[in-house]
Picture 1 (cartoon, rainbow, N blue to C red):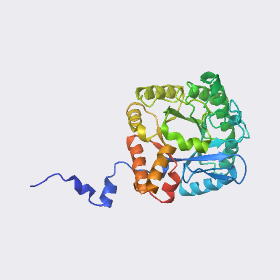
Picture 2: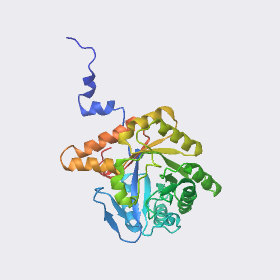
Picture 3: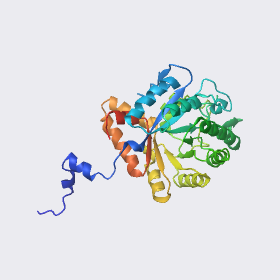
Picture 4: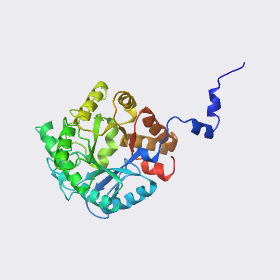
Amino acid sequence: MILKRRPRRLRKNNAIRNLMAETKLTREDFIMPLFVIEGENKQEAIKSLPGISRMSPDVAMKEVDEIVQLGVQALLLFGIPETKDVQGSSAYDSNGVVQEAIKRIKDRYPDLFLITDVCLCSYTDHGHCGVVQDKVIVNDRTLDILARVAISHAQAGVDMVAPSDMMDGRVGVIRSVLDRDGYEHVGIMSYAVKFASNFYGPFRDIADATPIFGDRKSYQMDYRNADEALREINLDVEEGADIIIVKPALAYLDIIRRIKDTINIPIAAYNVSGEYSMIDLAGSHGLMKREEAFMETLIAMKRAGASIIISYFTKELLRKDLI
């Protein structure tokens, strides 16, 4: 038999496979999450998220030094305060933990692109992402507080804010307030598509953000819906979002692909804590090759259409020179 077509010729060794690779990861594709807590000389490992810690700003700077040396060009900053109240007022404190971290990082690394999570769940005593009244999350009263948080981050020197609360209209309100106060240069990376997911468990441990009652299904998206995701994105784009996030990533690659095919906006895939911990745990038990599994899933996100990947694996990926 004479075969004219032999696709295996282009797979016969690593060199040709690399030459033919249609999807490639670069250092510039990744954003590293960083968690800061109040105090000094503190570092708290989180058992459910191996290799990731929450740190006081002074210790966090040592982490920033390392990841900058590795070539990370963007950070996504989360804060966990000591004091919480019903409306999360420490989130917009000009001397709050995130605001302090922004100033420290920008003072040492002015060109490092710094993004901050804008939400209330880590700052409220009830653990929800908005103002609560009679156990109902009140949308419009929450918007003013989120705007105050975004402004406090802009005043501290952040490059971009990332509202993750899933309140209706928050992108428009934040954009309006930033522009009004002279921060039109501060971008918005919106969690436009954030599903009510089972894959957030380890994040809630590290961010101390588990609701004390109910769940987040009245504001985060129903994972059965795809058309709704496109409606959410269109609303956020109209309101001024510069980049949109799909969270989680692995179970929603179809959503990333649909967005890529229909809406002209940069997409960030959030490789969330549960996805990370699941692979790490399976790898530690010999059920799969850990690093190869991480690479396979990250490539899948890029192949689906993500421009950016937010991943807890970023530091290890670069330290081990896997890309």
